Amino acid sequence: MSHDQATRAVFRKGARVTLRPIEETDAELLYLWINDPEISRWVSAYLPMSMLQEQEWARSAGARSPDDIVLGITIEEGRLSLLAVSGV
Image 1 (cartoon, rainbow, N blue to C red):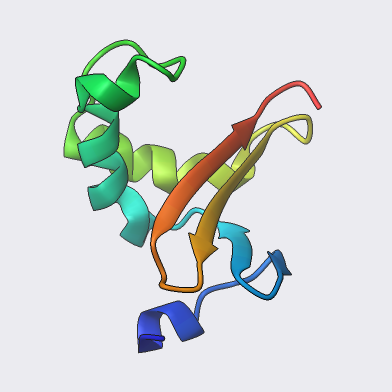
Image 2 (image 1 turned 180 degrees about the vertical axis):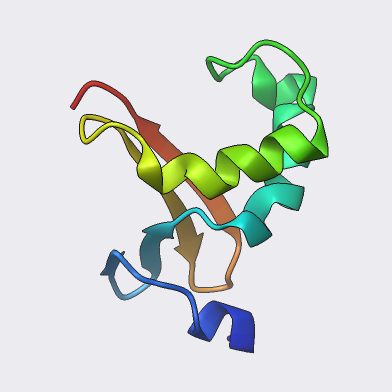
C-alpha cells in the first residue's frame, strides 16, 4: 500500500474492498474515465469534461445532497472504481 493510500479517509473497510470519499487527487483518473466513450455511455454525464471541471467535481463530490452518495471503491491492489447513488 502506498503512502497516499494509507492516508486517505475511509468510510468502510472490508477484507478486500475499501469505500472512501472521492478526493481531488482522483481527478486525473476520473477525467480519463468520463472522456472515454466506452465508460461515459454508462453514466449520466454526456458531455466531455475538462480537467478543471473534473477537479471541481472531485472537490465537491462529498458536498452533495444527503440523498446522494459518491464513494471511491478500492480493492486490495489499490485500483479505484467509482460508486455514485442518487435519491437514496
